[in-house]
Length: 112
Image (cartoon, rainbow, N blue to C red; front, side):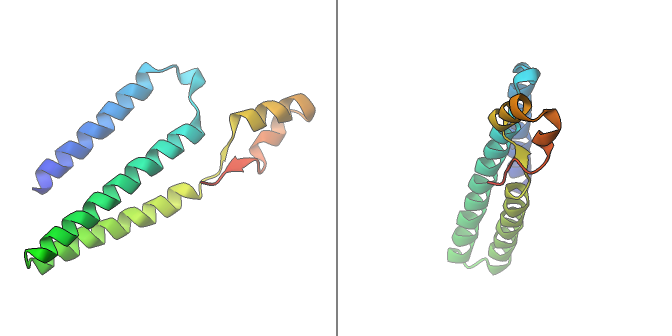
C-alpha cells in the first residue's frame, strides 16, 4: 500500500513539475506556487487522517498511528510553507515605481 502511495505522490509531483516547466518561467508567480503547495499539502494531510480513521476502525492501531503521525508531519510542513514570505509581484512593481527595486525584498511578502 505504501509503495502505491509513494508512486502516486511521485506522479503528482512529476505532473506538477512538468506543468511548471511547460509554463513561462519568466511569468512564474511564487505566491501562486506557495498556494498550490499548501493546497496539495492540505489534501495529503486530510487523506492521511482519513486513512488513520479507516485503520482505527479496522482495529489496526499501529497502522492508524503511522498514518496519523504522517498527517501531523504534513501539518508541520504546512506551517513551515505558510510562514515563508514571498514578495507579491504587484507590490514589487509598485515599489519599483516609487522607491526602487531594492525595497521589494524588504518585508512586502506573503505569509499565507
